[in-house]
Image (cartoon, rainbow, N blue to C red):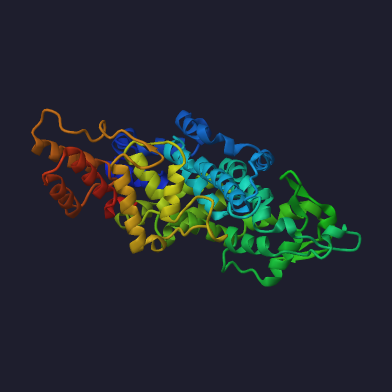
Length: 490
C-alpha cells in the first residue's frame, strides 16, 4: 500500500487531492519522498502543527471573528452614525453595503485558511462539517453568529468525536436561530404574554434526524420528529446571543424517541442524552460514514470504504480522525478507478488553483469569485448545504465561469489574489524560444496533480507555439491547464 511502502508522486497527488485543498508547487513530489504515513499521522493531530501561514492569512479578517454581540453592536452603531439626508433609498443602500461587507469578511475567515493553512486535513474536515451542519448568513442574526459557529462549534471538533461535534452545533445560537429552535417552546399557563401563541417548532428536530444524524432513510417517524422537538424545547438564545436553556419553556412531560423512554422531568440533560443516542445510532454511523466516503473516495462510494469507516467508528466511539485514517488505509481508496473521478466544487477549484500557482489571499475578492461560481461560503440556499456530488457542478454556464476564473488567475489579475508567476513559470531568458516553450509546458504540467493527458498537452503546446508575446503565451497555456478536465477533477 502506498501509505506504508513505496509511494509515487501520483500516489501523493491522490492523497493530497482528497485530504487537502490541493498541493502547493512541488508538494506531491516532496511528500512521495518523505513518506505518506508520517504526513497523515501529523495531519490528524493538527494541534501539533505550527500554522503561522494560516494565522497570517486570517489576520486581515479577524474583525469578523469578534464576539457576536460585539459584531451586532458595531453594526448598529455604524448604521446610527451614517449621515441622514432624508433619502430612504440611500439609507437602505448604505445598510445593505454594511451588511455585504460583513458577509464578505465572514466568508474570508473560511477561505483564507483553506488557501494558506498547514493544517490541511483540518481545513477539509472543517469545510465538510460546516456544510453538513449548514447555517446561512442570509437569515437574520445568523450573520453575526456564523463565523463564531465555525470557530467554536465546528473547527475544534472537526477531527474529534462526532458526539461532541453534534452537541456543539446543537447548542450554538447560529443553529438555534437558523433552524428556529430558539422559537420552539411548550406554552402553558403562566408564560409571559410575549410568548403566548408560540409553540413547538419542528424544523431543527427534523433536520437533526434527516440531515445531521440518521439520514432520510434512518428509520425515524413523524412521531419521533415531534418527540425530538419536545426534548429540545427550551434550548434557546439569550439577548446577547449566547446559548441558554429556559426551563419554563421546556416540555417536561415524558417522551419516547426511537423506542427509548425519556421520563418526565429530564430538563436540559434529556437533550444531551438524545444527542448522544443519535450519535451512536447505527443509521447515523452509516449515513455520516457514507458522507465522509463521498468526500474522500467517490460520489457513489464503494461498500468496502463505507464499512472500513463504520468499523473504525464503532471501535473508537465515533472518533473522526480515526474514521478518516481507516478510509485512507482501506485498499479501495488507492484503486485506479477512484483517482481523479470527482469534479471539484467551485470552492475546491478556486482554492486548489490558488494553491497550485503559489498564490496568497489579498482582500475579499475570492469571496466574490465564489459567489459568481455558485458556492459562496455560508450561504447555501437550504439546510442541506451545498451538493457534495459532481453532477451538481456540471453545466455550460458553470464551465464558462470556471474558464473566466482560470484566465483571470493565469493573467495575475484575479481580484483577491497576490501572485508572482515568474518563480514558478518563468518568462524566457537566454534560452531559445522553442526550448522555453517546451520547458513552460513541462512546468505547467507539474502544477496539475496527476499530470496532463496527451490530448490536453497537445492543445497547450499548439497554443503556446503560436506567434505572440511570451507573457500572453504563458497566460493562455496556464489558463488552459487550470480549466482542463484534469485540473477540474480530483
